[in-house]
Image 1 (tube, rainbow, N blue to C red):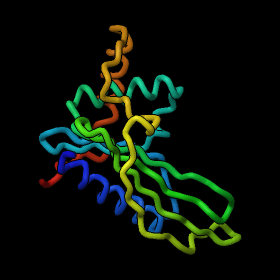
Image 2 (tube, rainbow, N blue to C red; image 1 turned 60 degrees about the vertical axis):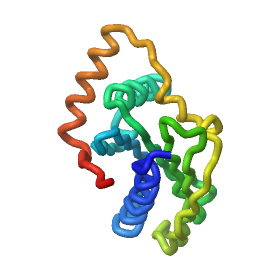
Image 3 (cartoon, one colour; image 1 turned 30 degrees about the vertical axis):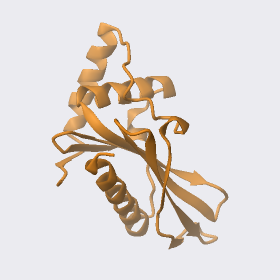
Length: 165
């Protein structure tokens, strides 16, 4: 497993904790890291795409940036008061993914009253529904141009930084 993969799991845990405790929001996120340590993070809901198109776009940027790992996270609602923050980190060269989960507890007014620590486990990569983004995707020239244009627009507005080794 690449060192960036393990670091990404720790960082996404902190990111979600800060969002939950500081703002009470849990967006669907996607982040990737390439071999040089360049990291990009954005909200998936901002894409406004069908699920198939979203998967194609995410695979396109993973491959364009020669990512070594990526992560995707979301809020899982069990009921009004019990919710989970869940994310998985997928490593290009490892058969296992890092899966993290923390429980949110909300009161009757849906205000956050508790957040557990993130439990970290390993799971076979093939069991994660979005684990195939490293696989080659066949796109038309028009679709490639559309995705390149969208990515160029997005890069100006999303978190981009270099991870430390």
